[in-house]
Length: 79
Image 1 (spheres, rainbow, N blue to C red):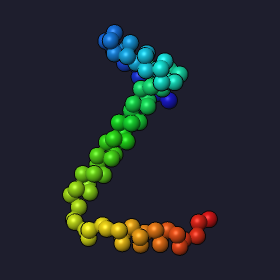
Image 2: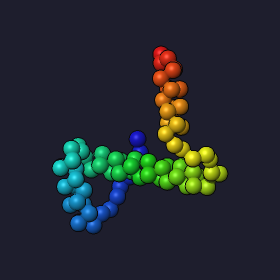
Image 3: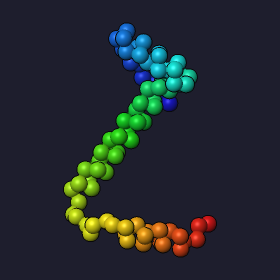
Image 4: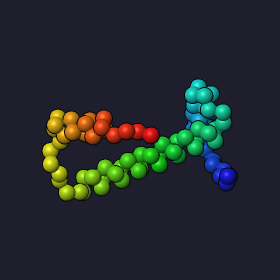
């Protein structure tokens, strides 16, 4: 694992320390890693949403579409 030093103004450091103490993180590094993971997830979701918005339109999704999905899932045997 690599190390990175981050300088924070006093107000932000106090905020991080409060979050670590009140949200069950063991260290400020754990808190920052969680923030970075959430940002990665957000960026991935944004990319997927943008790709979906740019894709060609498909047939409308209605109740029969979801019913056919249920039938396909219920018909499969899981190992």
